[in-house]
Amino acid sequence: MSYEKVNQAKKTVIGTKQTVKAIHGGHVLEILVARDADNRITQPALLAAKENGVKIDYVESKIELGKACGLQVGASVVAITM
Image (cartoon, rainbow, N blue to C red; front, side, top):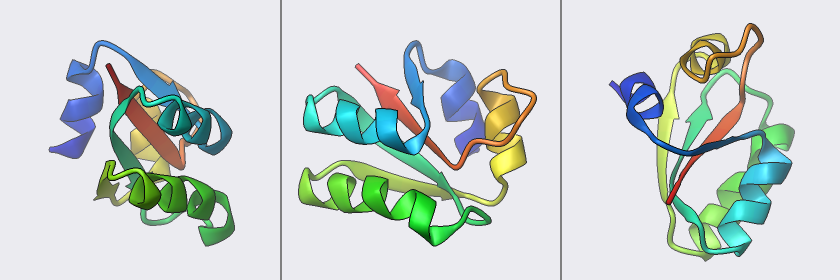
């Protein structure tokens, strides 16, 4: 279900650093975090989302999240932006 959100989103940001920047810029509606991703990679995005009241949703696989974004590699964090 969450993978479909990524497919249907008009704009997304992929990766922790870009997600944190977008959150601080006020452009993020929701972030999706892969449960199988390393905590040290996802932690900055999770903290920024919590501090700024951004909805956090979890998906099972970073490989599937990457595929939903059109990548051939995994994605630990994806932001759905305005």
